[in-house]
Image (cartoon, rainbow, N blue to C red):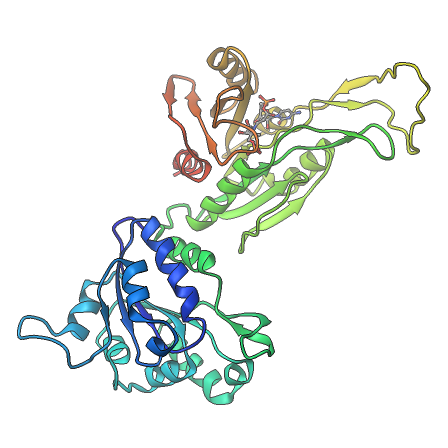
Length: 390
Ligand code: PMT
């Protein structure tokens, strides 16, 4: 998403400027093009050389540096796809709100007709000060996008709002910003992770699913503008803002939760690994060891995706096939038996595919086509799957 994007980065004076070196490094790893402007105060906190090194680009700070060929504070905003100011200090915010152009950064802001995103960072009282509150409101009314600072322990030892948003989150914000909202009118239900079925008060049956596949689909769908309902089995969740996430444990809970949203949805993507069997009569006490083998009566759980495919109207239904043998054959059989529109077949035995890894190797199968994909990060596969819903 950020590959080849021209990001003009303005750094104003604040201790959080050191964190923006990490942001530069992350943006370069995503192959974004950077040009950097620093205010004089910013260069008191971090040397411009550090920014030149991490951003692999020239750092501009002298408003009067230029030549007959280029007026930098005019040309840099022209080059940019977006102007990001991080950290944005109270002083720089005040100048921007009032049209003061007394340094390279603020002059470039005035000359900029591209979108401007600011990530403020300052002491809590400075942030709460009525002047700053008013200035931020003014910038918002100008259409400037604001990445709100977070609460925490600040460098001045205050505990409160004012911490620069984490560089990883700023990168996510930019990725979101550049993503085309082609799923804007879609409501998509995505299931993720395993389910669990109790054996007794302390023991249960589950499987190795980490939820990574499903959470990646939910995250990418949200970036593409979809309304996302994520129905998640017990996993270590990662935060996705702006979606509805419902945690469930058993198959029955997963099915009932999907039922609540299904009729009004446009698609169901079942990337969860629901447990196929449950104990017929789980004990509500801890079973004691007897010295003998333990026999459990397991009964088959209802097939969730098959149930919803049987009652679909407008919905597209996408299932997964997690296989260790005869991948394509078994996946095709599931596609037909469960009446799915597509099935994403992954071979669990391949290195870099399946459970609890950040990559997957999959084939997208429908009635009359198979698309075999190589190894790729789960977020990339997520986008290939979401392309099926456009
Ligand atoms: O979560 P990760 O660690 O990232 O791992 C990802 C994954 C391997 C779990 C994922 O890529 C995957 O393959 N998910 C489907 C797992 C599975 O249950 O596959 P299956 O072949 O047993 O089931 C076929 C389809 O029926 C699946 O869409 C499944 O969600 C669904 N199903 C299965 C059983 C059941 N009782 N109800 C169902 O709806």
